[in-house]
Length: 241
Ligand SMILES: Cc1cc2nc3c(=O)[nH]c(=O)nc-3n(C[C@H](O)[C@H](O)[C@H](O)COP(=O)(O)OP(=O)(O)OC[C@H]3O[C@@H](n4cnc5c(N)ncnc54)[C@H](O)[C@@H]3O)c2cc1C
Ligand SMILES: NC(=O)c1ccc[n+]([C@@H]2O[C@H](COP(=O)([O-])OP(=O)(O)OC[C@H]3O[C@@H](n4cnc5c(N)ncnc54)[C@H](OP(=O)(O)O)[C@@H]3O)[C@@H](O)[C@H]2O)c1
Image (cartoon, rainbow, N blue to C red; front, side, top):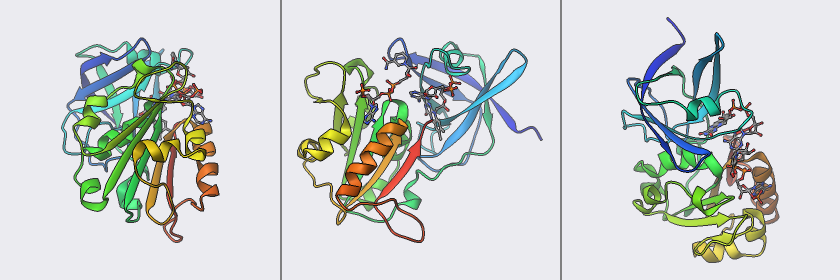
């Protein structure tokens, strides 16, 4: 049995010149919201595969992936050029621990992302579990430019609180600068309207590895530490590179 399934692209939406969302049909996979799967194309006779988080919730038969073009990257520029009807190879084995089944109960769930790191949280907020388990769910999305604040309608259709950051231009309605600084000076909590403290919070982080490091340093200063199955903590992390 081949390790790869073949999906067909049904839509490739371009949000900006570098951000795209691929939807594909024809592959059914069991996965948990927050997980990723390897997707691939054949390039010069070789199959080039990369991990992508599911944007769709598990019960949606259309697969959806949210990507950014890394100009020199082997795969992402090619994914961005796919059209409806093109083949997309999908591995059979979704994986990953950025899932609510690995998260202990808390009053407030913080879902903090940079760039396309928003993808797994879009899947999570479109399942039932967060609304059953947490009094507050806060989605925090940081991007360079305001036009990169993708999927706002999707998030607005859920009960989640939404806080956005735009780091490279002034953008009404979004916080300026980076997430770690806004944790340090209290602007993030003020914008969300809920405290970010170990007694009541669990934080899931996804995206740029430098952001993950800098946010974890801020959270450590508040007495929060990584969650492990055998040692309860407050932080669950997935790095995109
Ligand atoms: C668990 C996991 C889940 C992932 N999910 C997604 C996803 O849902 N969407 C997505 O776009 N990417 C995701 N990625 C990254 C993805 O696997 C690829 O690395 C990315 O698409 C670029 O592929 P590439 O072959 O063009 O370049 P690569 O050779 O893979 O990457 C080259 C460089 O580009 C930068 N880079 C890679 N990915 C990103 C990114 N997403 N945002 C900003 N800079 C980046 C890094 O500096 C990296 O070293 C995920 C990675 C992991 C490990
Ligand atoms: N976004 C674009 O305009 C664009 C265009 C074409 C290609 N790309 C490709 O995509 C890659 C970057 O993609 P991206 O813009 O989605 O992701 P990114 O570089 O990770 O930036 C996303 C957000 O994360 C912030 N950030 C970066 N480091 C951080 C840290 N240590 N702590 C907290 N926040 C931090 C950025 O702030 P800062 O702005 O302060 O860094 C920005 O607000 C580039 O390497 C490039 O290859 C991007």
